[in-house]
Image (tube, rainbow, N blue to C red; front, side):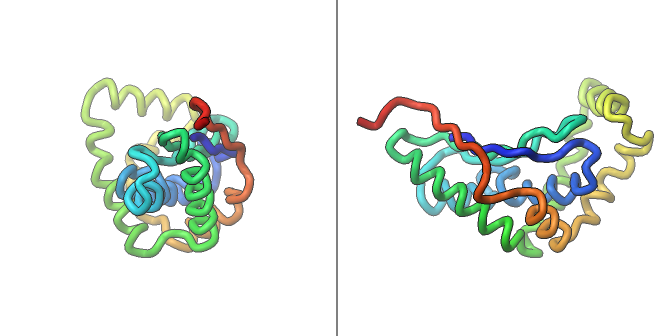
Length: 172
């Protein structure tokens, strides 16, 4: 099950609020809001997540779940309802702080090898980021607050829109 809509670009002013907010929504896998609602509470999917794929232009925002054919409609309904609630209410302070700590604490692993460092340097050049982009990344993540996330999601993500694609055999 895929649900998608327009997301954001790499230079979007809401980039960090959407990125950190999505970590709460579905970017952190099993401990995310989608993971709790779709997988843990209802057992509708082993894997459920969401992500932005920012590019030079607006890339997509996607929610994805793998489920049994006979549960696909229910999983889709729960995914949409969870997104709608997240867009209207946003994360809690505790959820946002945990997401920021996870992203910031995991950052050293994202640059732990020469090849990973080269990927970030290439990305910095390709997207015309300032030379201190990597040096200031964790500070910009830490600066995101709940109101910024709520505002960015409310303005940018239409919880009732989005195209849903369900792939699988028929249930009958």
